[in-house]
Amino acid sequence: MATQSVTVVGAGFAGVEAAWALAERGFPVKLYEMRPATTTPAHTTGFFAELVCSNSLKSKSPTSPAGQLKAEMEALGSVVLRTAYENEVPGGQALAVDRNLFGASITEKLRNHPLIDVIDTEWTPQMFDGSPTIIASGPLSTDAISQWLANLTGRKHLYFYDAVSPTVDASSLDMDIVFAQSRYDKGEGNDYLNCPFERDSYTAFVEALISAERAPIRAFEAGGKRDAGQAELEELFVEKIKYFAGCTPIEAIAEGGLRSLAFGNFKPVGLTDPRTGKRPYAALQLRPENKEKTLYSLVACQNRLKFGEQKRVFQMVPGLEKAEFVRYGVIHRNTYLEAPRVLTADMELDDCPGVYVAGQLTGVEGYVESAAMGLLAGVSLASKLAGKDFTYPPRATAYGSLLSHLQDDTPREFAPMNINWGLFPENEKIKDKGVRREAKITAAQAAYAEWLGSLG
Ligand SMILES: Cc1cc2nc3c(=O)[nH]c(=O)nc-3n(C[C@H](O)[C@H](O)[C@H](O)COP(=O)(O)OP(=O)(O)OC[C@H]3O[C@@H](n4cnc5c(N)ncnc54)[C@H](O)[C@@H]3O)c2cc1C
Image 1 (cartoon, rainbow, N blue to C red):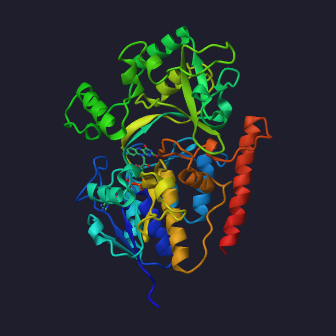
Image 2 (cartoon, rainbow, N blue to C red):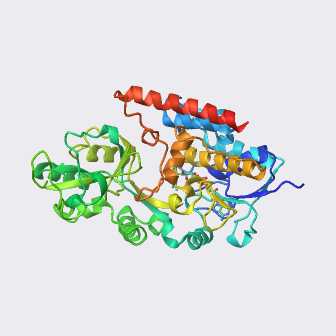
Image 3 (cartoon, rainbow, N blue to C red):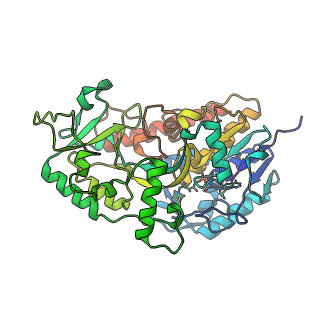
């Protein structure tokens, strides 16, 4: 019986891992990559798995979330990590690579694999013939793919821009100040937490927000000319964000007048601060990001401040003085699906059997996370095609933590997430934060070892 071949679209971080995993397990792969003939607005080379920005693949420390994810990927034969270690440059705790050597080396490995047929062409949806296809075309997928996915999933489940508020680790909130209450006590179980401002703390916050340093806008994100100045791009960008993401960056709203946030994003109506028995001057609300309520996002705080500035400014909010940010706010061009609504547990499109999705398109964020999801897509599809049952890594693992983000249907603004402490299950009984984190890694290691054993 002929072995089923698989199409993989995109030789980015997810695509190379998926293709390699399938080929190493004996399945022929057609790997489509359109660069360099056709490129994206961010890529500049023809290398596979191009690092479009930083050259860091995050922490190597075995006791960090990214380190645990790496250990899990290595056990599955990650070609990205192997190549990264072969081309490592000094980066302290981080796995940093020489981007050109890394790119050249991984491209060569994939091109020379006897079971991988690289097709240097843009893949278009008309090419889908019903055979298993992994779409790993990334955050800057071509318009043809984006439109196709939008049609298959319903337009509202495909995002073209990230407009993300910062997210904090619940255990780092000051619960002597922060109080649980939904407006007018509506909603179940006081799902919202509130950070109450007084006039002075509010004024200081708004002033800091307006004057904070912003991340530069790239011309392609704003739809402007390459040589346009930042002021012009900012204007175009704010309009685009309003249209595509239905929001305005919080710093742009604050610029509208000192009280605009108190009447808008931070309006305190229906809230009573239990410490004073009164309505606060303004209130920043926090909404749970997962069922376990280990992560909270800052409601309506989408922004484009530099990350260091976000930490400085949002830690001025009462109750967030020691907040640990697991994800900073971003507003940028980014194509991704609302995974909990449109993907099965196998990362297959609910409404289009045979089409699998991998990488950033699924709703993870980062080189390593995208590679991780590509690798898992390849391993699970190989298992399925071999007629074996495949169970996914358990909840306690780093993989299980990422998957829980993609499958958690808690009502929220779904947005791509990197691996972080808050995604791992919390052991409430352990009070000390350091010990709690050690326990998370120990539990992940044990659960992963058992899962690997079960794969046979
Ligand atoms: C501007 C920008 C900067 C970023 N900076 C960082 C960073 O510093 N650190 C970090 O960890 N993450 C960063 N990310 C986030 C992200 O995780 C990376 O972009 C990561 O590369 C995503 O992996 P992927 O495999 O999903 O997509 P990609 O690595 O982008 O791979 C997708 C591939 O598909 C190809 N492709 C697309 N459409 C087609 C088609 N129709 N036919 C054939 N080929 C196609 C593309 O050419 C590309 O090679 C950044 C993202 C962006 C957009």
